[in-house]
Image (spheres, helix red, strand yellow):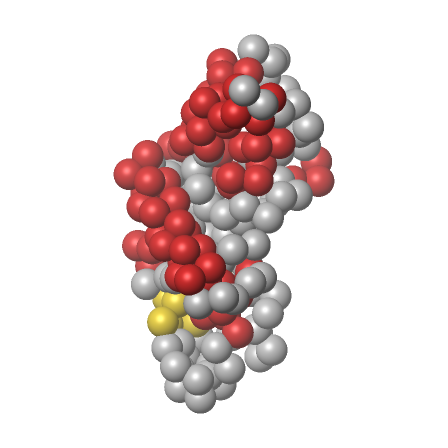
Amino acid sequence: MSELEQNTPIILRILAALPQTQCGRCGFDDCAGYARAVGQGWADINRCAPGGTEGLERLAALTDRPVVPIADDCGQLGPRSVVFVDETWCIGCALCQKACPVDAIVGAAKWMHTVIEPLCTGCMRCVPVCPVDCIVAQNVSGAATGWQAWGQEQADQARHRYDLRSDRGRRDGLDGFETGTL
């Protein structure tokens, strides 16, 4: 059995402990990439700001590593946000839709786009690609952060939607973030 095969169960447990926002703030393309890196000892457990303190504790328990503060280059712990499209400014370029890793943005080229709020993970990947800056973030969790602001059901749904998008991209022979395959 290869080393990767031996580590797979821990990698799957680490992946399940992550919030599945697919934000990339950890420095990896997606939550699965970060889980592999943590499970194989290539990455520290303190790179998932969306997981918050409870996320750090989950990863520490799974890896027998100490809880340490979130790495400075991964952003700050903060409330959960979702994005909204200011429909008066949207030009229908569809770049936000292509950037969304969980298909939470709907619309068509040359038509206004909108965000399905319950599906938005708050990853913010759509914000920098918008050429007219019509995407705004709004706090939806008050003072709650990490797993207090984002439940396991939401994480499971986000992972499922990300997996579907990735599978569709592979099936269609596409690659890159635009298809969710990172």
